[in-house]
Length: 186
Image (cartoon, rainbow, N blue to C red; front, side, top):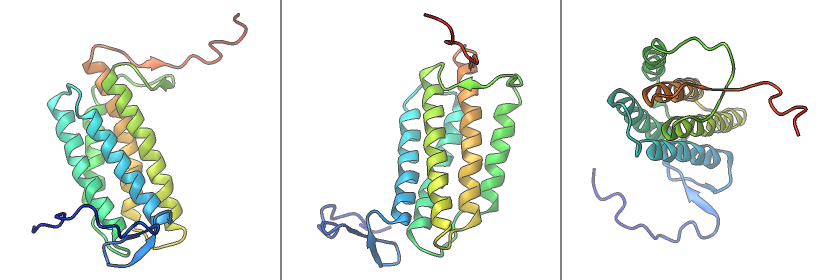
């Protein structure tokens, strides 16, 4: 790869537009850019999670996801391109199975929290859900790969399971939701 980012300040976006990978320019608040931004934010949140002391298997899984998310951003940046495919979805499903197999079955809803790493995994999960909603919204107006939507859906499942696995690895249990916990208390 050559010097693709040799000039950072270009001033080309000063009028409120940005360039897509196919060379076209669009408004910075168009649906495609919103979806790309949420995927980028998700990737950045995973970067924050990766600053924590994590088990190597979880670290490796998250690094792989970060690369996938960059590919997904590239796919969204070039209309009608397809980078994310069935193999990406299957890999996430296998990771969910791998990390979930050693967790106790859930009988209650859980709250996001526990260890700092688990809380960050849950935060990333909520950002992932928003990114998924943006991609779905975009797909209602423009062509978007089914795999892009499916990937984000499976990723949110993985991040939920990783939040639980990180609590277990940190010696904490899940933070259970108690229905009506504060009702009738003064």
